[in-house]
Image 1: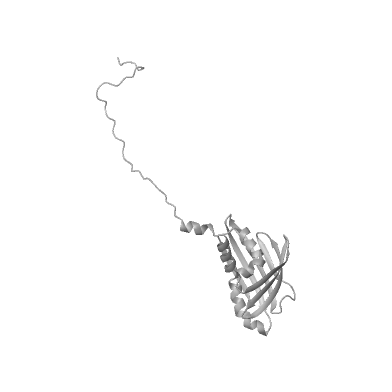
Image 2: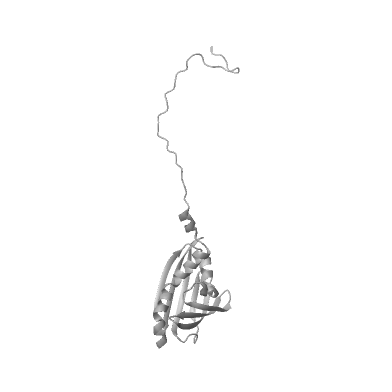
Amino acid sequence: MEVRRTVLVDHPAEVMFDLIEAAEHYPAFLPGCSGAEILERTDEVVAARLTMKLAGIALSLHTRNPKRRPTWMLIEMQPGSGSLMRRFRGEWQLTALNASACRIDFTLSYELDGTVARVARSAFDRVADRLVDAFVQRADRLYPPAATFAATSTTTFACTFAAAVPAPAPVAPQGPEPHGPDLEQPR
């Protein structure tokens, strides 16, 4: 099975990357994820053991994921890490659109193995298809996007329009011109 998703998000690439990289928090928001343990974390790689429970079947997956914060992370299953997974490989690419938004491109390729895996396949397919949405919803809960505030607030612009009206014709003075003390009297 292969999943490809592209979304535009009202969150900085750094925020989204950090949520994706922080596997220890997956059980709090990822459907089917019942456990997560970080095995290694450096600037270049994060390794984790994830436990999934789908359709009553427990699945353990050990991944080692090269990364370049905040733009890219590869998800690679380690050999022998899960008896129900024949293949599991994903990639996250994040592109900053501006200081407060990014584009996320996600691909996931996987293959379940064994007779028991057939039972869990449809549940795993649903989880895989909704994976990106789960991260976006998590970001929206933790860091409400600016667009949410813009949508609920109003800005009023006041404009004044003046009609083009011709200037009044000059009026001839009535009576003698006023003279100040410093002005010379007319002759």
